Image (cartoon, rainbow, N blue to C red):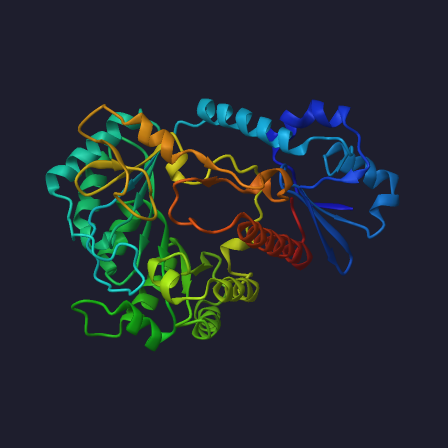
Length: 436
């Protein structure tokens, strides 16, 4: 037996008394099993522990004792869902006490230089943040962060169209507050100057740069305004430059019926082009939840294709990260220490999609619409009692991003991703001397 990924230390402490009292003989419903050539992988979604055990682990006293102590084996009458709910409540309380870092998603502009046909912000007015508002945003960050290191997320529109506003905000807070940042961008507008500022002034650690296909497909889908060069090649060069200075790059591949075959070629190209760079990750983003694909796409085929691509690129994929914690919230929308600031200084709910749909306050006022916040943060429930991925699922009722996706579909997709991550951890364990 070998523990490939240790259990979360905080959850283990919370469970210490429970595991001593509940010696069981059946595998818990939240334990995923995956056969591999030299045994069986067991992953516990509540604790995050991943074990490699022998095929006959149920007949080994030593292994059974470990699995009972670590909640893989539970009594038949044990209420695992109730345990998850209790743990979530405790972990939220601990999180509020221990973590004071605030996350600010800042939109320097809603304008974009690309014209992607599937964009959820299509038709939004191209609003730019003024210099006055940028300074006010910086002051708001200083006033609300209480001197604790802040996380800044730059989004848009295309945030690089407002790069001067990003620079102004960072210059205003740079000698008064520690911070680091990340960005979601199409990557076209970077150059040597802005990469230097991103590294040294913005403290940029991670950037997401979407690719829609190989050169011809990408250039056609992005359809950039006022750019006559080879946009694909420019973006690839910029990814190289960002990686070279130590900035992590996540490359979401937007999957639809228009590029489902081309993305296989793109993935192979990226493997060759970036030669297993540890700072590069690939993510697969099916487009079926956009207005366009609800009208013109095929959700089932998109999901199946997404799964196959995730398997194909699992060595690079963000889905190779196996969670070692219980999921206690959905996203930035239901985090007390996170907010979204649009170009006008409004405080909004969503930090990734449908910007501006729900405005609950302003950087210019201490008044907050608590009813809007509470409504947006209300959890969506379904067949939770019988769901075997319940510890890793947390959905919001008003989230438009996954509206219409059934619980069974979500459960299947999440389980597939967890199993891929289990196998990736196992391959890492086989490939090198493993340190837990």
